[in-house]
Length: 437
Image (cartoon, rainbow, N blue to C red; front, side, top):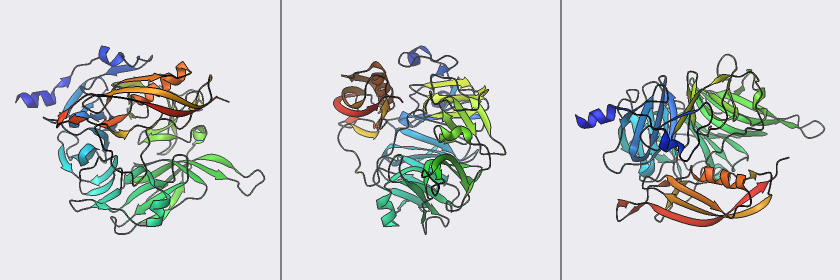
């Protein structure tokens, strides 16, 4: 009885400890779900977060949280959560762990799909979906064990990065394959549950995101038009939808605000056109919402007129009515962690990185070139970064940017002799820096 009471208890707000490392921006209110949240989603008019020790919690307003699942011992780190429908959802993470719910999140059942960390996953039901480890791309076709996608071989070798996976139904599944960040990409799709796969490489197109909305695939990004005209053409924002991952239709809704950042970091509530503008073009007409400055990260969700984002805790604020439906180039999109290329060997050693990327190019008003800095970080027993220091940086603003991104790094929970430990690490890293135009 005591365990059930704890699991169902509404956790109290904790503001002071959360704000110690992340100052609260005007308009944003910070809360603590009771653990370090690593992913956020929305379903049934509620926010959902997951994190270390298989922790999963929900909130109707982003303030008070109800804990629905937590491992009694040392559980897996969960860094992905999504709902396919109002009742079916899933969360995934280290050691091949996937948790499924078929009752809207009230209860969760764990399954092991191999032993490797699952970096990315999308499921249509508990036995059909796509999942990605460091080394391989897999699909589930109703069997208990996943099957590796090895064909077409030449395509997987040429496009070794898989930034997005979407299971549209038990039969229809699509993965975005790319040559690398900001490079050519295409869609690897099946319409028969994985029996056969086809690859479609849209010409003159860059894919920024792929997601599932109202039973359709949606892809955002940019495309080059007018290549046959003097000057060689120019880029325009793109938003297309598809029933099968091969035949795509351009939306007729307004997407002009996407021209600054190509509208990425999307979910079913819309896409970010900049760090202050949310654009939703998935339905009958485009709607625009203003996001207050100061707290937004790449991990966000919206419920009604509220938006919540993750840093060391959960920060939420009401969305404003956009008086200026133009993205602000001064407030760029937040940094997203990138996936390793297919074929990467699983990490070894005590400190095993799950996602530890930095922006390929930083923008700084004071310095330019390839800069080497010294970093020191402390990783807690749950695999999250507890402390990060950046030394030998020539610019305070560059120091802050690197620090903030290091604080989002994730590692497999470190252990020694089978026991969770706290570990400290330091090294030199080189970053590329340019001055603003």
